[in-house]
Image (cartoon, rainbow, N blue to C red):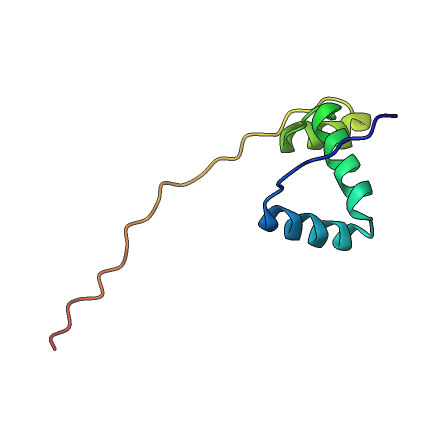
Length: 83
């Protein structure tokens, strides 16, 4: 393990680190380690469609049936009002 010292860290960053560590129940050191780990060893990014595909993959492939639709109706004429 290596020791790392960061000099002249902006006070606003220190406050953000303290708040984030408190939210996660970590010490500041543990929170910094978690941040570095997440940035340097990222998990593959999944988007919503990939997550949905993975969730329902066990059901197999299927096609969504086409639904016939009527044309959009015209908006009703409500007349004009004078002020």
